[in-house]
Length: 390
Image (tube, rainbow, N blue to C red):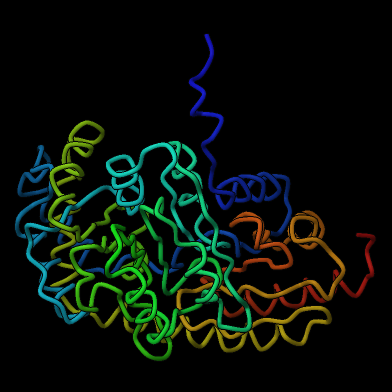
């Protein structure tokens, strides 16, 4: 028996592979600093946990509506309306287990062979994986370091074609921490407004910005009905293990996504959705404090990265990732990431884990303690100072 040919086209998420390797080294007694995995190192705020416990006690342990509990969808619609400055109806909100279904389901619903998807590169690897899996054509848009890891707009316009069906945007971005400037979003909206194209706007890090608030393309005239907003609870509320995301969809996509949801997951766990209501409607102070701490770590970690010979790191404007250019070291991305794990005990990711245009970069998550970040800098500098063979 052979697997379907589509399985040869599906990718993976390297962060989890590196985590397994790092844990294996720890099991042998090695000290490893984990800067590979993309999740907050904070606990879920107490009031959210208590809401989940109360929901369990009250019997929220049964099937719920496929689209999500009405009370949560209403809270999400209010939140997105307030934070983006647009009018969102709860009928357009679909609650799903994690953010990835809002990448996968719309692609299944929209794409045929020969259709093209423009996506940022380097970027979250599941974009390219899912494009390939459904049989469409990935069209990578290289992110430009000296533009804050935004698009070259002239190149973007040239890559648009009659076959372009989806454009993916991610701001703030994984792995770069870059935020697409509002004027660039406006220019992209102008190019897409009259085209038969859907925008997948991955805004999972929307609350994690350190300057101006990121601009959603859905806010521009004519774009809301062409835009899928992907967001969720994992990053903002340190709820990665709770598996709860959502999409705000154009009206014509809602039924299709609900059909795919009922065929794959039936529904998102009811008690976690009750916790989601508490997250959105309860105090936001723990999340705000977390962002303040991430900013503090970012400032120190990036400053110290820039003191390492051969490293050049732009100051990330959002998320919790540093994405230094390491070309000056003479190492390739994969070789350096592997060596830092095996020899220095610092787990990080090669830029190529996020696409071909990530060569020359590595990604660190600074969602770790200041003590560990400072120790990581010492280990990286010490390793490179030894002049180990490449």
